[in-house]
Image (cartoon, rainbow, N blue to C red):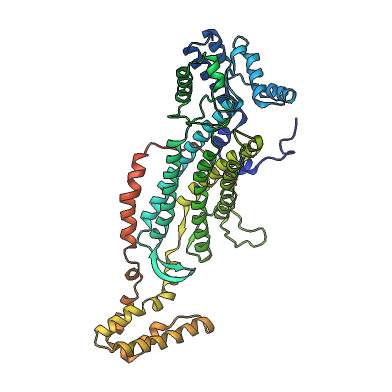
Length: 479
């Protein structure tokens, strides 16, 4: 037996993506969709008056699942044409129907038709996984809505927010991804029965010049393959611009997930929030204490790959010559499935990480206490003025105390003693007792907790409630 590990296998399949997504883009799945397209074409042509027998269609249906890929490969080596290899292999299994398989069609009838079917199925899998991720992240937002955390702009300490509010930003991005995926699902057209260069000349000949029947054939094939519409006009292929539309929506998942993963890695460095870590998990082969955020790093790695596949689709669309050129084929065989597999793998990681996120409130509190004395100076100044102080004198005193405290943080023992300095200054005596209250973190988070709850109630819950029955196929993070 040939060793399955002796040849290259894409890590997207062997390590990362789910079985469901792999099966969707498998050679067998594609071949079966091709056969579905041939069956539908024959049925519609028969209904519109072409001399195709019911027994021929019955044999096509009976032989549909008897797909011998080894025989197809043998024929392709001989014929040097993948579609015709499948036509001949199907004809061997359904000899009565052999004369009418692929009647009037071009290779792109099945090749493009299957691509659109498989992309639509793949979008459905991603949609379901996204809904699951949104559910988990919404719960995290709700649980952490009130937890103060130091905010950052330019990765410099800034006004505090809450952990739930920060997570709501991640959630909002992923909500937009769901909207984009569902929009593409609703709009994605079928190629239909368009003929060799998109003129439908072959079908017009078959139907004796009857334009109405040619139009009916296109409509019937499209509807029976489950699409609401076909492209209005095409060359030999459907417009490759649609690949860009699809992959841009898919890549959006990578962008949102990477932002989440980067933020999580930054917070893990600060020991404020960590991804789940298994009881026997090893963080480093050399440093036993390490708790590396490996799943978040993997999200970033896969997202980087995914993000570079979307421009590839646009480049391919831009380089299609006239009615068609074949330099899209090998590229699309790789770029389209791998985009979906990468996005699927990323969503599996999000589904794994989010429910197990571990926040450390005490660490967040210490970080806030280290910075809040500076952030609270305006509130302290206003309170002291209201207690009867001179605003300009108090401002200068706070400025001097702040500079001295900052110098100690940066060049001394690292401790922020600003509140102690203000507490020892007689000019602030009227508010000394209020200093702990004036530097309470929750005073500085504004409406962050309310924003989280309003966002969940008004924006997130209606979306999740409308998709309460949506469940993703099984999948797991393998390593």
